[in-house]
Length: 268
Image (cartoon, rainbow, N blue to C red; front, side):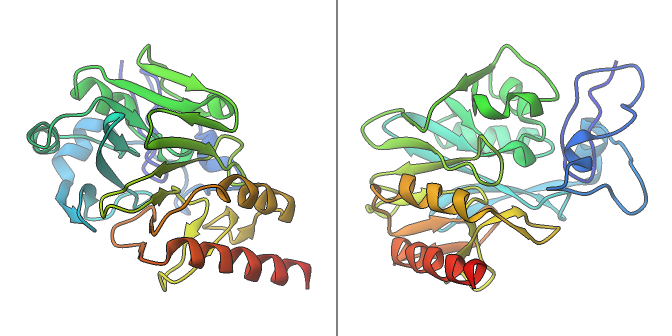
């Protein structure tokens, strides 16, 4: 029995004798099936074919697949008063990543922003000693490899400590989650939004997408709700979903201006 992985979205499925017939994550209108058709790989095959880049991204320990595989997200290690958090997940984990994270103080909990980044989160949890995986309840249906290590939360916000709050920004997925760190890695507030909001290529603005690869914007009502939920939080930095895609300094001003610009465009 093998927990097969979709190479387009990196989602790992529950162990089965044969590969699944299809990947609902990729068949959803927010994602896409590879032009070559549905294919499958395994965790062991990825470990043999790829490496993990382990380095600093804007003063945080970061890990990403090298060369690029599936969606090019990277994980970040956050040392906070809520414990050491692993923000996001990747398609595979190896001994080098586990060693680097342990040397940095270990991981107490994995938090994933939305289903496109669930990937091999159970493999990561098990490799790190069975740590808890925290996901929003609204996206429960997208979990393809169940685990007793997964815990769901519900509601608009979840305060994990004095400094760490999870915010159900929704819009992209019903359970899309942003993390706010009151003091951040640079001593000021930092926002970790996954890709809702989505940091732009110029790293001066964000946008609000129902589907990034298919260029479908969010509904204005979802954007307005997101704006209201983020309004109480101060942050100077915004850490986007992939390596270097960060707004460092003036983050909240950039996001607020982007809300104005986006809503003006979709209402024009």
